[in-house]
Length: 534
Image 1 (cartoon, rainbow, N blue to C red):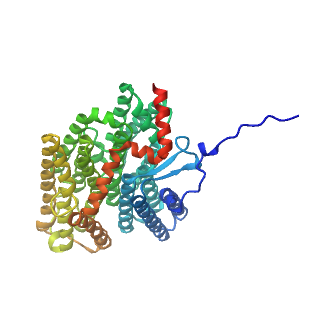
Image 2: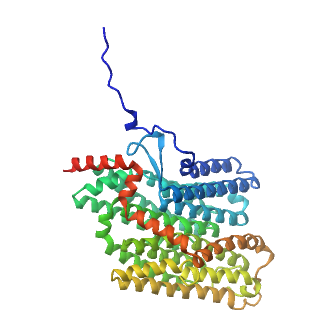
Image 3: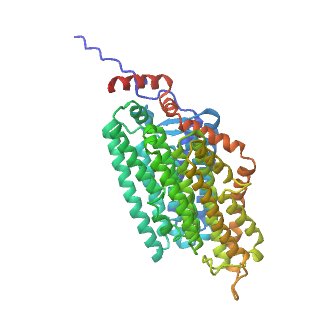
């Protein structure tokens, strides 16, 4: 008896049939390296001499991986890695375009800088309770958030980085740390809940969680209401995570409580993940809805800039002052998102990378100031110029760079953003950028004048022996970060080229879809979508 012939299944429709190129594995390497070295640090947590060596090896490897990935994307275009060989939209995909690869590279630099600084700041007790595993876990979560191509996995990586950041925030268990951690945790949990609701809404509406698939289905959807609702939910959730006005009060209440190395990595990375998520969701997935939200985003951006800078002026604690400057910087990044033009987005991309480096350096610099002067209170600080002239040079460079003054890296993105604002007639937004820069300059020059220029208090010991280990480790780290901001300011051409490419990619969501699906499949998918929505 003859058996019925089974229909042939074309596996090429669902699976990646060719082995990925060796260089493509760089997209998942930071995750693998981060988790392996975090586990090794946990296994050796009682050996507080060996653990930092393992952690440093992991941080160097992560930086090498993201640097290799950046060069791979720079020369070969967007890189895709489908997990389990399942083709999009069936499987989970990692996607490294120029935006994700650039921010991952800067995150690797920030992670290594803070890890080196913590060699002298984190004590044996904090090492035993997991300082380095939490740092590696958080860094892996941040980098994977920049590289995921799946909206639910973006939520997962947010959770991973939040777990690491919670651990870092409460190490030490001081009263002010627990108070700050409670506010940080509560507001982030609210934002995460909104994010999860938006993800569920997306899946219910489009039946997919793959970002490229959502982008093409959203582009073909004619019903504006549900789409705009999702975009607004995402905007609210990510604006809260980015500490944009009026959802910013948790940041200055929490970032000043942990050690300065922790505050530095938080200021450099965590809020920037929120900004990245806003750029990705509102420009790649729902670009037409970004147009509808543009005025609201612009108002939030201007308010964040001005109130953040005014808040910094009102502070006498150096750490709280920097916390408000982080908020002001978030407003500047959102200005480019509100404008939506190539010039504005280029300015936002450049400013985001610049802010990651400079805010990290400012926190580490304040850590050195606090160790050398014995206080973070501006009213009690003084005498550092005479005792530490090189630190005063570094402080001036960082102050000018954060304020957007020449010849440092903060200048060029602000010029771009002001020009983009004037081009569309948004004079008030350009004015907010300039005024916030002026107020930031006053706040940081005031810090410099009080901590460095003013003579030390009578009887105060500046730069005593107890502070020398942190000063010794702080100088090379700060010098390296300062070198980056000087190079980007004096020779901005390559940085601007990368920022311009990011802007072009963000303004072309079809290019992102085509990179994930391939030209032929993207065209087929578009036709299929058009048929199903008619």
